[in-house]
Image 1 (cartoon, rainbow, N blue to C red):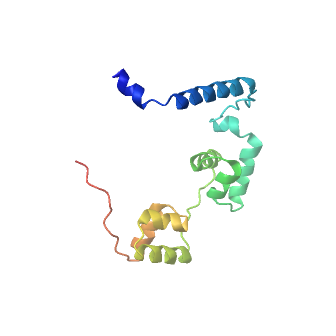
Image 2: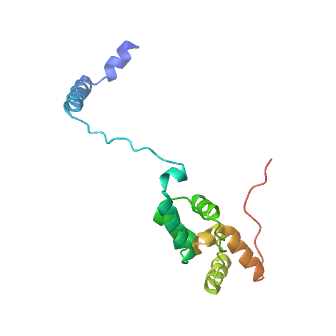
Image 3: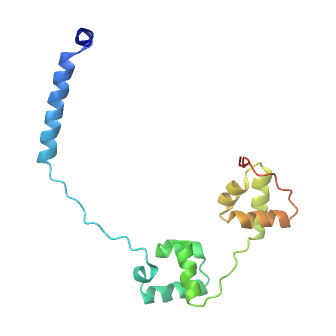
Length: 149
């Protein structure tokens, strides 16, 4: 077995690889790595946003700002934004689809796109698109899920 390996071994490659590894070791040990300090990931909404920011979020929503815009502005999840609004006894608006969005949804769906793809295209929840299509009389295609065994 040793004779077979010896016949196919490339000693120059082995020597060069060893030299490269030694060089890399020297480079790594000579390099000073500056690690940035770890910033704690605060998940608790009550600690992440102060009372003033929460009141501003509520005021923005009451002024007509949509929840996706609030999500981006305050870097929160939609669930967190809605929780803050509910905690402040704000009535949540329904995001109804405009006639233009419904027309776009019908066009995309009739062009063969799935409900999910259609919803992504027009920026609305899948269930809202589904309800709008049913309400307008569009016959929905069967889902593409495979049956569970």
